[in-house]
Length: 159
Image 1 (spheres, one colour):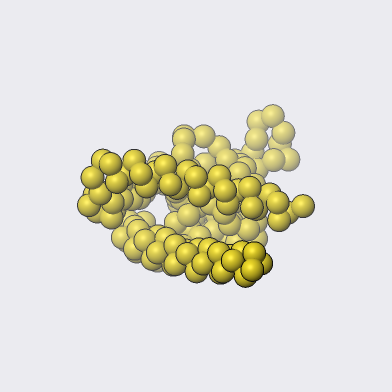
Image 2 (tube, rainbow, N blue to C red):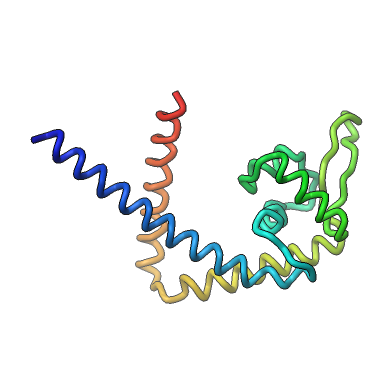
């Protein structure tokens, strides 16, 4: 009996995860589509994720960009190549270690990045603006709990 209840709960967890994944995916796609025209050329999801990975006016290693944007290294290399070609980022040698190449936004890239962030802020307001303060606080707390639990599950499954 206990095994049947556990299996039923796990099946329900799976169903909720699928539904939440699909909802997040739809929201992300909506936000991506609203930002795509800002760069002046057709942008794919990886390029947009790379552009939003820049949080400060600093140099990023390719590994840092991959981690922040959740993009694999070969894909990130192609993305950065395209963004260099379009003039949004440039590669620069690390002053401490000349073997290391870092990436930074150009002036044009900073302008596009600002536009993307402004559009993203507006989209977040459009999407979540229907929530009152109590609902926003509840959603944020719930997402923190889910995030912590899922990190625990991920760590457990890596072992």
